[in-house]
Length: 492
Image 1 (cartoon, rainbow, N blue to C red):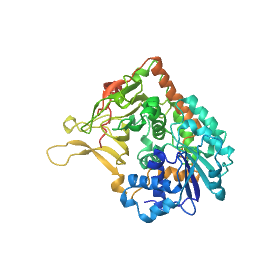
Image 2 (image 1 turned 180 degrees about the vertical axis):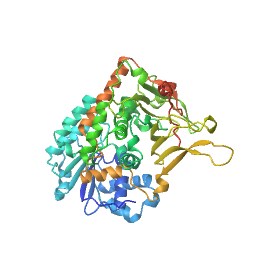
Image 3 (image 1 turned 45 degrees about the vertical axis):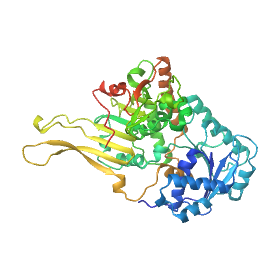
Image 4 (image 1 turned 120 degrees about the vertical axis):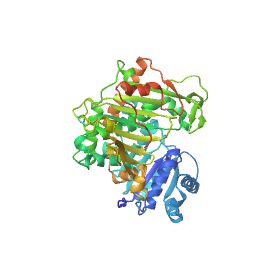
């Protein structure tokens, strides 16, 4: 386990502090940082919400969340007590200009400390909250603001939010969070590429046939039906998670991992993405929407039933895309993206498919030579798998088989390692924005997504039905089959 270094004392203010994100992710993440003694001194966590309750009631609420989301073995009583003592609560309608006195009083005794404002609210409220923070005199040189996704619903709305927030906070103190970038396996992708002589010399169109990125979910829309029906898979997943993963796979080696050096390389990838317009959108994209089916042997309703029994919706719950990057490194290498709900299993993985060996010197009787494949598993069971050709032991002639070299994080690193939010929250306190999106990244990502969205509208491209528990409509498989390729089996 790497050494865990404490961060400076801070005040961490969570707007939407009693919401699902706060109780399910932020509070447990901060609790684990407390358990590892990374939070020191008089650091405080201050929840802000419109709910009228006492700090004791809020602490009880968080204690209940820890019971639900933190294993009992990790909830040592002295750590729980120490963490709950750091919690404070302020009842406030953050969109209104009055009533900020209690928050001002809570922060006044420690104006010199690092101050983080985490906006775990609807993005439509970001601008108003930031303006009110400024008007209340709560913005100082030690402040940072964290913006949750989705940042807008298209390029225009994202630009408006960035303008409003940027009028209060300078760019270097705005942290646009995407928790995928905090995952250990995503971090390890950079180490695999830039820390091993084995891979980087082969990381281009000369050696790689294609790349696949899959994020499959077995659940439906759950309690997010209203939001999801306005967004869909393209806006909800591809615009942020997928394009950030794509950038890490495809970017040029940065000179260092400093904040802007890496982000400069990512923006080059986004700007090199070939637009997908109306002329090719039906050949390069697939939209799907799940119908009733079965997942893990259990019957589940279709998307329309989860919306309350509506007769029709034009929202996609699955999207598959063939995209191309117009630069020297990746010319001619397709990147296949796939995400969907109610698929057979929950998994997130990146597949680097290398080109086949040009000539089989072993003869047909030895068996087929399978091309090498590097699979980076993001969730669950994070790890890396490299398939190589080897001889099958025994007499009777030479026989070949593709076998995996496996690195399982759980087996290789026995200690628990921090989850994504834990790492990213501490990076905010440190003031390190390297793993957060810069404003021009958000703009470039939305520009590419908006082109696809507009092409769907122009061509009246409706979502195709697929059964819950399947890998999507047949056209998703045909997206690769037309290129004599197929999706990687999602199971290790």
